Image 1: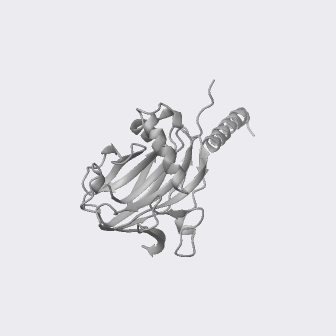
Image 2 (image 1 turned 90 degrees about the vertical axis):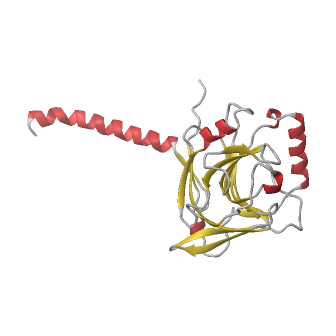
Image 3 (image 1 turned 180 degrees about the vertical axis):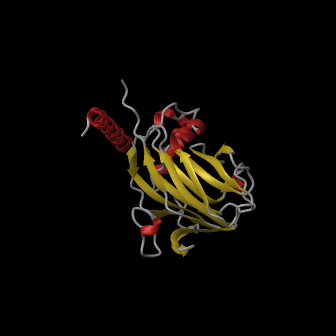
Length: 261
């Protein structure tokens, strides 16, 4: 080794150490929260812990269909609503998330609900939605909303969080629209796709959960509560329609919040 090479060796070692440290920091700060992949299943049923829920408190209302099929060479979730209501839910352990936490998936709508109108209870149906469930503290709610939510929890085996952020494909509203559910403000909608132009095509999505939550629930809180679950849903019970959609694997990359100084 000549003198020039000898001088460069310590510098190279320092740069390698710094690079390794940066990579280690990235690995610590970005955590892939396990969400069971649809593509991992060997049957027509979504793998546990995914589980189907019908309309809360009702045993007579038809339940939307969720099953796994091969499409374009991959096993994906098929979602059918036929005058029905249903959600496929994946519970999470209740994790505190930080900025840039991302939820990714792809979906495809083949048959829309043309008579749906999310502004009104009679039209409150969606052929396709992906939702994030947040455990907002009940003290953040007014008396009426808090009482309604507690009553809903008592009559159903489901746990209803106080804040649900739903990304939807809607036939009527333009992409980018944001609005509360017509029945309860505990659910807020963000329209990602609209109309007929993209029917039958796979559309990928990547969403910053923290930024979206703080924007749509800005009147309720200035902080993000624990994330307790994800769900895929479709309902056509109010309009009496029929829809067909597909959803690929959901992946969630968590960024824990920075500790308070």
